[in-house]
Length: 188
Ligand SMILES: C[S@@+](CC[C@H](N)C(=O)[O-])C[C@H]1O[C@@H](n2cnc3c(N)ncnc32)[C@H](O)[C@@H]1O
Image (cartoon, rainbow, N blue to C red):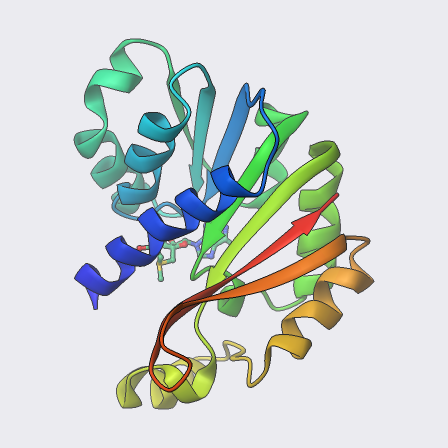
């Protein structure tokens, strides 16, 4: 699972880069966990300032360990918090959040606030997996813990559009029969 997450994080960064016009000077990741996505963002956008925001101090310390050189160089800022802490990166060119969507009790409100920190035309890259493509344990455990899983791309689009995003595009990593993950790219 951890390895699968890492591959998805790197793939989402590639998709964000391919679907966004340079220059990209301010980039943030919400919920970076172990920091693989931050590492990929730092490599993909070498001229950018990068922010990593996670509500877990344990996860932030993993992100810091993995990306210590960038923190020391002042290129990467790590902050403890949720969507409101993304304000530090505003006006962001790109905000990425992989496998975070499920944890938001009110995803429309969270995405609307996130959008306010993107510059006009800025890109949201939301990596996720549909319920039916998740491991059986995750399908059982997530809803039991009060988290929301999504059954169709349209369900994720509905939330993004209600939050004010436009130009919504979904891409699948891997085959349609056995997707390794998805990304929704949407414009502020
Ligand atoms: C399932 S992990 C995914 C980590 C990483 N993005 C990946 O794909 O490997 C979810 C991460 O998001 C963080 N997280 C969950 N809800 C959050 C929220 N509302 N605000 C900030 N971080 C959150 C968790 O602490 C955790 O680090």
